[in-house]
Length: 292
Image (cartoon, rainbow, N blue to C red):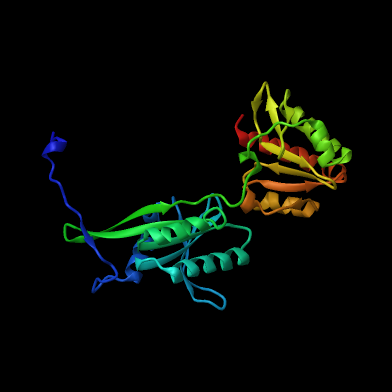
């Protein structure tokens, strides 16, 4: 058996795609279409290429993760990225998310070179605009060309999740003052549903949300916030078109799933009467999704 020390070392010869006489952006796009995994974004499918944008140009590639319902708006550039490349990528991302708000969207910048200056600019957007920057370099190997992608800026989640905040303990009186006795009573009704499927669960009152705990161990498969006029509830359930439609048909006010990665609903007292069975089902689904 040949040892590693006996193997021939192959030196990779960098190739500039921008100055290459035959290779061009369309060639690079074709390689990604053949194998979207090349970019290192996971098991994606090509939804569209050269996608026409209203009152704008064409989006190079639209990739999709069918499992998470995430879409990636990908813009390619040979050579180093520049201002127009960044602006164009963000513009196309914004157009797509407005046209198809039911999906989670992420902007992807792909270039041969991403300079320190533009790396800093891109990093400023991250956390406000979901954006990924990938350096895609070409190398000559054994008479052929290979492409190697390196993620230099990874995606950060939009906005702030209250669970990521420092869980500063409070008490029931804090939430009664912040919300109302009526909405805190709705929270109690919700806890009763939780205890039917997960006996021993209790509320843990924090500054930004009310979570769940059992035997001192948090299990926030749902969290709630009693406000003045309604009870806000986040349920960690995988998104499905069927469930989204049922919530809409029931008249339950639901915020954007893609942004929060959970069903974020606003409940009023009538929901605990008219939609009690549906609410109990949601609690059960959230508990099952937690795997505990």
